[in-house]
Image 1: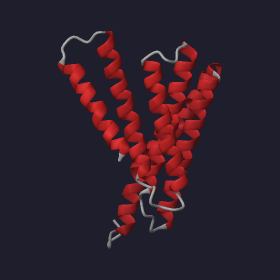
Image 2: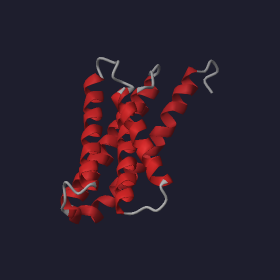
Image 3: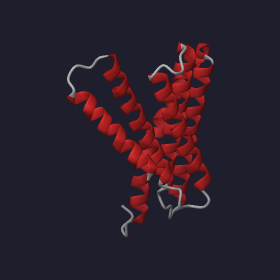
Image 4: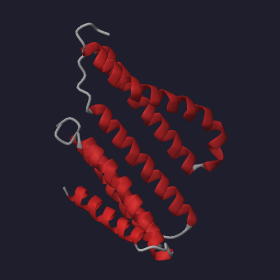
Length: 180
């Protein structure tokens, strides 16, 4: 509930900033903070969709925690409480990757699997998400490894998209009486 209120407050501040006309440094910070908090609120809300599942509640809580930490970090960097290009860039990107990956996995876990093929497709997709996230975090930690990792990130990114689209379609297919 607090994430919804936080999202609504952020939206109200963003709307006020846009409606006041000229966007100066202050309005720019408000708008960037609103967007940042909106993104992290959405990732936290995605993670909250699996809180009611006992075997996934710890993962959900970690995803929500990463979203809260990411939102707080973004706000502190937007308002220059934390500075330094390297810490801002590495911290923001790392927390964003973790929060988005957790949200993505949480939404895939909402699928109530009824067939082994769907379980395999979802598992492979979650594996692809994890590999992409780990590779991106590795690139952030050691930027000199970017060229060596680009092809691998691209391959697993494509598999991630394929699985994200294909898993729910496969679930619907195996659920239907005709199987098609």
